[in-house]
Image 1 (cartoon, rainbow, N blue to C red):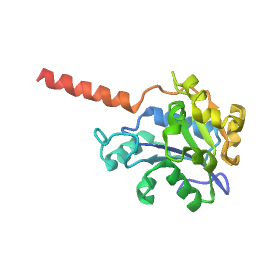
Image 2: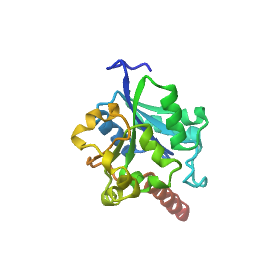
Image 3: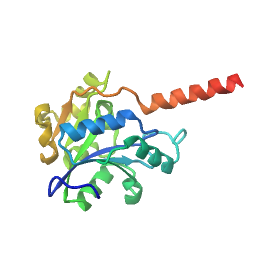
Image 4: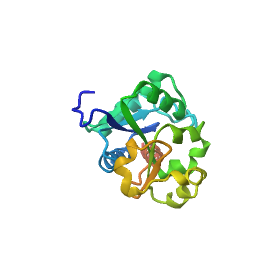
Length: 206
C-alpha cells in the first residue's frame, strides 16, 4: 500500500458486497468506520457475484469496480477485486484466506444492521464471527430486527460496548459491536429502481 502507516500492524476494515452500484451510503459507513474504529484503511471487497443475489440485473464486474473507485474517492478507502483473485465465492472463504495470507493485518468485518438480520442465511456464518471481530452499523428500520436476529442472539455474550469500538479491531474474535451511527438510508436496490423508472419514463416520452 502506498499510504503511510500509522502502526506497525495495520487495522483494516473490510466492507463486502456486490456494489451494484456503489453509493454514498457505502462511503459514509467507511468514513465512520475509519473514525470510530480507529482504522488505518477500509477495503471494499467487490464480489464478482453474490450467491444470494440473482445474476439478472447485475452490472459487469469490471464496471462495478470502476464505479466503486469513483464513489470511494478517499486515500484510505481501497476498492479491491480480491475475491476474484482469490477465487472465492462465499464471505467465510474469502475472510479465511485473507486471515491466512495477510497475517500482518488486524481485520474487522463491517456490515449494516440489515445484514446482521439475515447473516444466518450465509454459508458458514458462525465461522465468520470466529474469524474476525465485526462492527454492525445501524440502518433505519433494521435496528430491532437486527438485535433480535438469530446471529445477535447466538453471539450475545460476545457483544462489546459501543464505547470500546476503537479497540474492536485488536479484540480477539468472537467479538462484535453495534454502532448507533445513523447513515445514509439509500440502498443499491433503491438506486436501481430509480434508474429503471427513469428509463421507463424516457421511453414513454419518445
